[in-house]
Image 1 (spheres, rainbow, N blue to C red):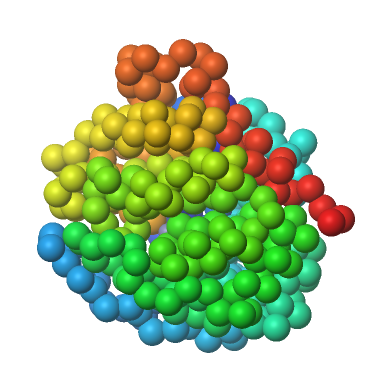
Image 2: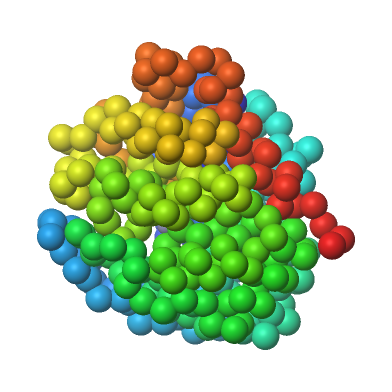
Length: 325
Ligand code: ZN
């Protein structure tokens, strides 16, 4: 059973595109049991080259109204797929595609949080405070390589309140895409384990989207989880977006780095399928058994594999989704 920290398949389906990686007809055979399905609002940004070194500007903010419309439509797209939207950990089962509704960037939440409970009632169980742009709650990292993730401001007061209310309602808060300052603000505010659904160790690939050793250590100390991102430009030491020249064994290197630094209880998978360029030899979810095989060959026993592929996600979800606090 493989639970995954991030995919953008709802966005693709909404745009009328065929899923490139999450081909749901292949889910049963590949062991793909779903995970976090991101809903987001499109950035009005040109398709800039990712040849390192690069330093792209932040896209312009999106309005609440546009974000609501986009997310609404993607939720409908998600509901049209052969997936089961899950609202509690006991609903996540092997043998089907479980969909955790996740906002990538909280623009669809009103700055006064007046609609957050409505979104919760409609299935929202996880949100990234920002995508890579500023919003009412905080600021995301621009895409830069090489660069520290300490490249902008932290959370606003509304952002801090968002963390507190998410804690109370039982919505997971995701730190992927946040600036380092925003990360530390979440760490200060949250009462549950820190989670990065789709980020890698900065020590192995110094891009703004990855986490420094200090950040990784904080995730581990909080009892949290890092979902390793399959994007080649977040995996490779040289930051190149070289799909054909990158093997999925790079993912093993990142899993092992997090596992040896934080412990095996703190690493999981966060593919970024259908939102990023992944190693050419992976071929979407159909390649997941090959990745598991490569992890096994690298020395992970069945217990470790179970933690990496689903049990760590289930644990942090269980600790986050408890409600009535
Ligand atoms: Zn992302």
